[in-house]
Image 1 (tube, rainbow, N blue to C red):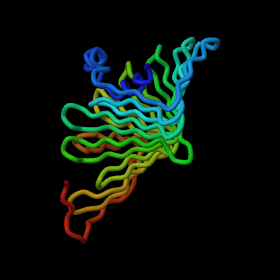
Image 2 (image 1 turned 90 degrees about the vertical axis):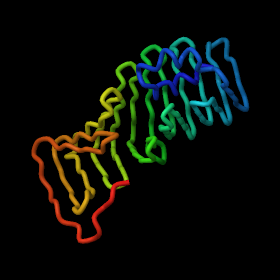
Image 3 (image 1 turned 90 degrees about the horizontal axis):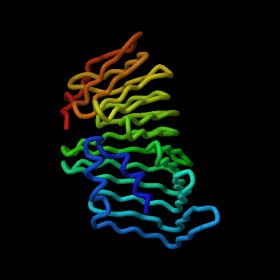
Image 4 (image 1 turned 30 degrees about the vertical axis):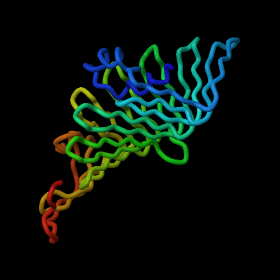
Length: 227
């Protein structure tokens, strides 16, 4: 079942080839109904569609695969979970998704709720993201977020209309609509605007570029202790 291809977008580039070889080992694929439309050359999966193995979980209400265009359209409570060898985890939720096998690109769209991404590191630190739309480009290692983009850690919130995650450098570039970062460090609070913000996923470092404005003030409470 080629529904597994969408989950491969969460792989590091160096691991893709090896993981493709043993991807189906121990895998279980289920749905309440499966239809092969030979005239239109497509497959339709309905009801509690799921793919599961030790590294991946993918769930949805419906999935349609068009063999002519090599495109997957997945709808209804789409959920993807990827567990890495270091015990870190990436989760994604959206209302609908489209995956193009030829270009290895996935498009995720919101419904009543935004597209949501969650990264839980091996150290337990959590990074949450949300947007109206997201596009994942597996070959380049890029993920683009557009519309009401927000990125949150345990002590920082960043807001803008556009974000770009680079898997190769593990950084987020946040821009457009005058990005705003609000948060706290040890002993002080801050709120800062700039034309661009770069956020480093693992170190939690943050850099501001061009027309930087805002404020920094001492926090009278007990200094924040990083988790």
